[in-house]
Image (cartoon, rainbow, N blue to C red; front, top):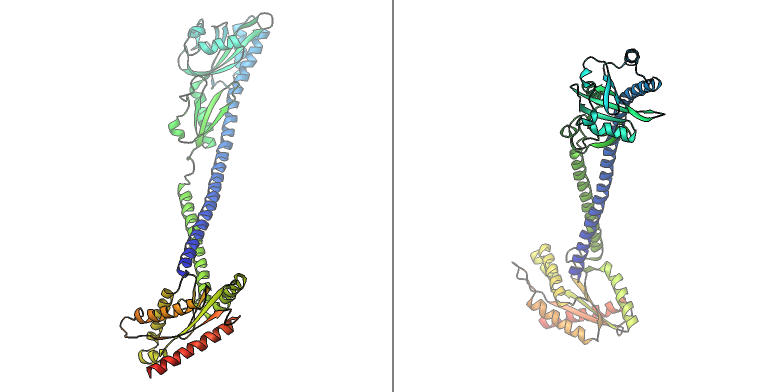
Length: 448
């Protein structure tokens, strides 16, 4: 019974320790996950702040040039009969601050180019119907049909090279759509500006336009790397999709994460092991307080608690309780002959024999020295005690043995029954002890 109970408590202690280890590990993992997520969010916020700076400079670059086109559009509406000489003077003043970015400005009647500024290098484009030019016709017709400005690019230009084109519809109050005005931005210069903005922001950037959403016109996905952030730049006009990542890449927190996991596991495992040791120590202390340290039997201290419980149950249920007192004959002689170490072995072997002779619901006590007590709850009558007495005598005769020592043990036994022999432990033990001493005296007379 005690062995099964001890095994159950050991398993329970292990289960509690494992549960605590698992719980703490889950808590630590949750905390680590939250911290790592917070670090990642902070990093993403920094990248977002950098993109906002990059975006504002790109938008300013495009909108500044759009404003120039709008200014020339207003000029054309006020001067329907375009005078090329006056227009060139106007354009010289208008573009004096942006001439390094602007390649040319053109006027399109319906969908055909009728005027370009400056003429030099752009004369070949005059007379070209852009609705027939691949790469430009779609947006030219879109401006004509939807009467909304667009940004296109980079595109291959009719006059050679690449550029970004801002197209605005020219709408005359009396006739409606008349044509378009376009400003061609130098593709190389615009890319240089974007390069500078990205470098200043500390970002790796790839930009897609609405004409090709799979291949970026600026940068490369292989350079941006894995897990970039995605943003839009002015979907209503510029309509660029941008992906960015920090210039030096995202922080590699893998080692920190793995180290934190290992640390969490060690702490959780340590807490679990400490819990197991505390439970085991508490159980050992409990056992020490109720068990004899040498034999493992119940001790006198536990007798007070146990007998009160057993007798109370017997009174409630109107049952009998048997008490058997026993000591070892000539134990002092064994100690004197072989020494106390052998005497201890005799006591341990005695405990083994007593446990083998008792049932699971019976309790065996070592009261001190070579005095032992068996309490048998819920017996039918005193005949059970006589049967137990005979079984004990036989077991000590046949089963008791010590390796290397030829010790044979005889026992003296006395018994009492609750409630016939008494209503309390003192009375019951007194009767059992008196019978035991009588048995001892009788054995001594027989041997003499």
